[in-house]
Length: 155
Image 1 (cartoon, rainbow, N blue to C red):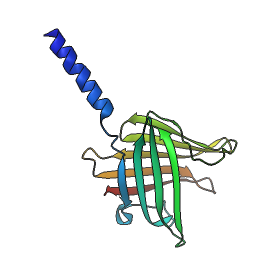
Image 2 (tube, helix red, strand yellow):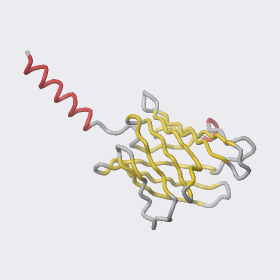
Image 3 (cartoon, rainbow, N blue to C red):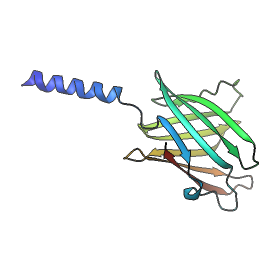
Image 4 (cartoon, rainbow, N blue to C red):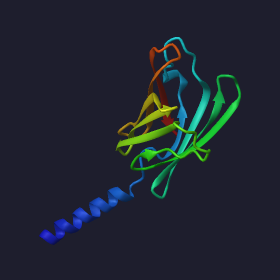
């Protein structure tokens, strides 16, 4: 009986290790369900986020149209277990983003510029895996705390 339980436990653990991260996939921003910080317009007109697992990392690409009507695209990689975000650009002293993973599909990102924390984001994938929210809290140029919400739907 012990051997059966141990075998099931090992396969159960292995299965959870091989399971796809809930954030992996293609996500489209739903502007109607998103909310900009009070007094600010949406920073984008449209956006698609594509995340995929690459070894021990999650590779994410943002692409869309900015509020100015110009297309944009950026790509970064972060460890699945959390850590420093790698952008592929030369590091600027004192500027970084650190990811803290609570559990798969639930993570925080802390943005630091010139050694000062400027934004904390919380990304959560719904239990059914169909939606993802990104809540961002930051301090604006006037020193006021702001909060915005981006609502994504899995494609």
